Length: 266
Image (cartoon, rainbow, N blue to C red; front, top):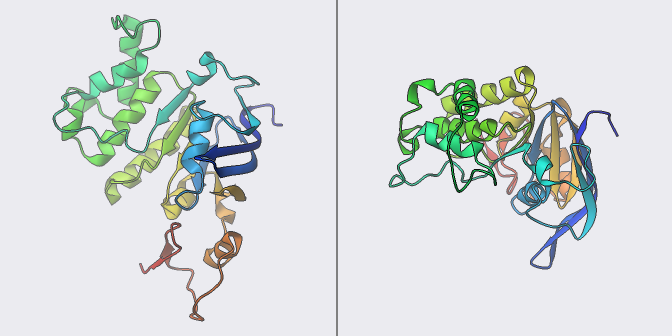
């Protein structure tokens, strides 16, 4: 185990509705890493995140967080969680960027008496500055673009002073320009603010361009290594146990989706 290991997963198995979703997986994430987690729908990606958060309980194995063999509330407070639908705020909900980010400063001691201290105000302002939303801090979140909404919910996680950021499909519903901006921002969080990031995404090309390391998960870990070494289409199909149906040549300059490995020409 690395001296700077932030997360250690050992022989982890998780069942949901009596079905094995994760089967004996082990992995380690070190401080400052940007890890991309990819795999087909139902492969266990979100289940792994929820188990790391302590929301789901494993049927076997263990998780070590921040050196804590039995993660406590203080360990979980160091995690910033951005769920798949975190930015889908209905238009009838009137909450500004600043108000949303302030929610990140709430905890069990001030949740029912949410008086924002000067120190918390500074944390909120700093988080908004880091995500580049100062100019829209008083704007309703529902009026922002998809990319801006994602930045706002990430700022909420930063306001909690999280060291480990978990993101579940943050690129869904984000246009190309906003996607590129968001990926650069996440890269900056990792390299300049020493945040550790574990991001789930179906956009393999984006993950490969941004992350240090990629993990392919489909019940078991099929690949765990440098993003630059992530397998091509034919090797990935072999990892999944898929047999070719046609004899057509497969070009590697095509983009594919993991749900069904269907090809989309550029």
